[in-house]
Length: 582
Image 1 (cartoon, rainbow, N blue to C red):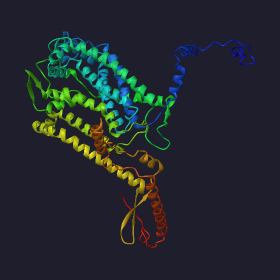
Image 2 (cartoon, rainbow, N blue to C red; image 1 turned 45 degrees about the vertical axis):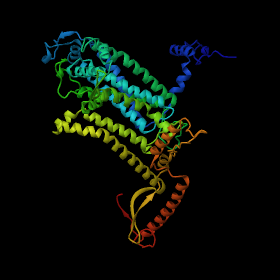
Image 3 (cartoon, rainbow, N blue to C red; image 1 turned 135 degrees about the vertical axis):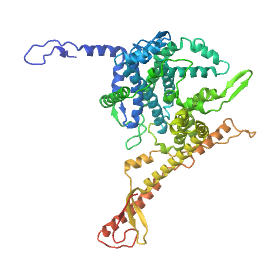
Image 4 (cartoon, rainbow, N blue to C red; image 1 turned 90 degrees about the vertical axis):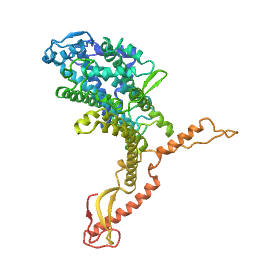
């Protein structure tokens, strides 16, 4: 039997009256009965997220993208994506009366005649810079900590696609004003398309609607910039976040943290409040940069003119590394079946960037294949725990950095009073030698850190207290590290080198995949070569037993040394311990 409590008096002073149902509650109940969102939302709102400063790198990328959307909507209200010729009559006096496209004129109008327009333009441009930089650094964090491993390989692929689309979005965006600098970039893009063998000229005609520059490229770039790529970006970001929630967030190793749990704060109210506050921090920093730091001053460059080019013209920083490769490659060309193959354009622009992207996408799968690791991983690794993997990414970073620096070879030559030819020759050599040196140095560095961890785990940390023996020798006292630090050091797994089975059939022919297994075995051996494996439990127990004996002896000697006695044994003369730096 159920009781209708809506008609029960809630006090003794008045008669019972029916209560009106809450409208918001009624709407929520109606929606939940038809969509079934209530249970799912309750579960997700209490979902736990771990807390660490490095996890904010992805949030910076996310919130800068939100700033891009907000400022982009503002700019679309006044921007005119047209290449129609007009005579500028705005408030910027040096360009008044100059013939230019409507897109350039509307950009100047936004900059000088629309209230807050220049701030919005510069915030939009700075947010684009930060968006791509944050994605890059976030991906480096994911790689160095092993967060890309199963089951997150697809999220890594999505991240690579986001980086590619963000770069293309940036290129289409800074090309829209149709100023002299961006027009030079579009002219270079036309040359890259035409360098494609056989189909290059057709691709250029299709994009530009005829011979360069035509009158269609700005409207087409506008549609790509405000509709096509943002729509794909939104879809990929949504998929990225859904996979993040589904797989649960990775966390750093520590006491109480395992592959089967997550230690952190719930979505509501803690994490949502922190994320919301961080959004306003990112927004505020971008607003300060937009208001204080000039970027892309198109009024200084003037409208695009195919007969002119700006001195020291360079693209935005994220497009600098292909430009650098283009600058340092020799002028190689071949004629094959009557077609001119411009290798000096194809290699740095049409071959190396797609190749680098492909390598980046395949890295998690290559790593899994070499190691044979098919387990799920929800605990992060320290970079030193995977020396070869860390060194590989550092070598790729070195290649990228050297190519990026080569994109400014003319500026470097001017500022440092050097020969641009010498800089070019130096970069041609270092683009191959530099990544190799970086790989070797990084790997040895990580192995040295592994060896240092082993010493700390077995013998304790250096205290800076120097003890002198009766024979005059000096030694430093070590004390055991904390359990939390010991847990972090021992949380990593021992590596297992893959070995080929070498199976053959009755005729002595290697089984299918046998040769591939041999390659995999060699790569696995190279990957784990010289790594310092974590000590076994027996080794740790033996070392701690020896250390406890030494600590007890040292304490006894220190106690007697305080009284001015001299001992036979390992420590102390005239009862003094010498404290020094270590």
